[in-house]
Image (cartoon, rainbow, N blue to C red; front, side, top):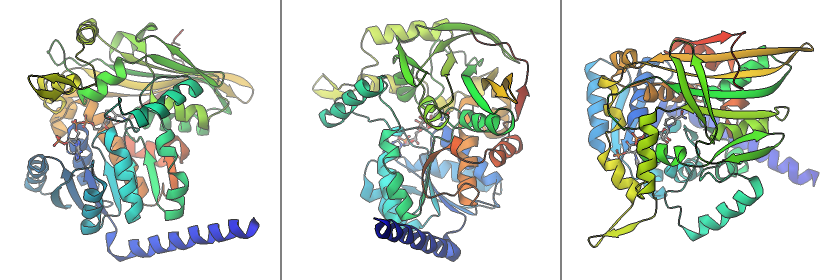
Length: 447
Ligand code: NDP
C-alpha cells in the first residue's frame, strides 16, 4: 500500500515538474478566455489593466464578432496585451482541445455558461492547463434521464433540489492533482468574493465562525419593468428554485421566496431580501465545519417578482422543449431572446450594489460580529468599462482569481473554491482593481 502511495506521489511530483518546465518555456502569461458576454467583457478589460501578469490573451466564443469588437476597442485604447480571437463551441470537447493545443495558453478562464464547465475542464485536463470559472456546473437539459437519475439521488441524500451542486466538479480533484493542474471554481462575487471574505474573517477576526449571512443587494434601476442583470436563463432558474440554508450540518429547504427579511444596506438603503439556495453555502459548509448556520439573501423589487411569478405560471421558465409550429423550442431560451441583453443595461442603470457577509462567532473566548461588504456604483462601472455593476462585480474577481493562479500565488494541483487559499492577496487586489471593501464591527444583524 505504502509503495503504491509513494509511486502516486512521485507521479504527481513528476507531472508538476513537467508543468513547471512547460511554463518556463513560452506559455507564461498567456490566457485563453472562453465566452464574451457581460462578465467576460469586464474580466478581459481588467486583465488588460494587469498586463504584468497577462501578456497575451485569446478571446474565444461562439459568436466571434463580439470578441473582435472587444479586441478592437482594447487595441484602440492602446492595450499592451497581445490579443487574438477565435470561434469555439465549448459544448464540444474536441473543439476546445483543438483551440488549446493551437493557442497553448497557461490557463483557461471559463466565462461562458455553467453548462460548459465539465467540457472545458475535460479539455484542460487533456492539455494539462489550469482551469478557472465563476459558476458551478449545471446541465442545460434537465430532462436528460442519465443526469436526472443522479440528480434525484442527490436530492434525497443531500436534501436540496437546486439543479447545480459541486459534486460534478469536485469529482475532478484526483485527476487534476495527477495532472499537476489547478482548478479554481467560482471566482465571481457570489460565489467567489463572499467565500474570500469568509476566509479573511476566519484568518483575521475569529477563532470560530458560527453564523454567516451572505447578502446580495442590487439597488440599481435600469428603467425596464423586467430584465435580468446576468444571463436570464441562469438567473431565472436560480431565483425561481426552492430556497435552502445550511443548519447544524444539514440542508433546510424552503419554498421559493418563502423567507423574507428587510435590511437597511449601507449606501443603498432599506430593501426587501429573500432567502435563496446559493452554491457557496455548499463549499463553506464543507470547509468550515464549525459553522452552525449559513444563509444567503438576495434583494428583489416587487415588479421583478410579479413578472417572474406570471412568467412561471404560464410556463415561460420551463427548460423542457415544446413543439411550436413544427419547431422545437425551449420556453426559457425563447424568453431570453425577448429580454434585454444584460450587457446592454450599462448606460441605463443607476444606483449601487452592496454585497457582503455578516459573520458571528468567537475570538479569544468572546462573542464577535463582523460585517464585510463592498459597495459598487453602476454608473461608475459604466464610465470605466461600459458595463453595469453586476457584470463588473463578477468580472473583476474572475480576473483576480485567474491572476493569482497564473502568478503562482494560488497554485495548488486539484480543484478548489476561493475559501481554500490565503485570502490576503485577493483582498488586496479587490482594493486595487475597483472593488474596495469595508469592515464594520458593529452591524445590525438579520433576525
Ligand atoms: P452571457 O450570456 O452574457 O455570456 C455568455 C457567453 O458565453 C456569451 O459570449 C456566449 O456566446 C458564450 N457561450 C455560451 N455558450 C457557449 C458555447 N457553447 N461555446 C462558446 N461560447 C459560449 O452570460 P454572463 O456574462 O452574464 O455570465 C457568464 C458566467 O458568469 C455564467 O456562468 C454566470 O453564471 C456567471 N456569473 C457568476 C456570478 C458570480 O457572482 N459568481 C454572477 C453573475 C454571473 P454567444 O453570445 O456568442 O452565444
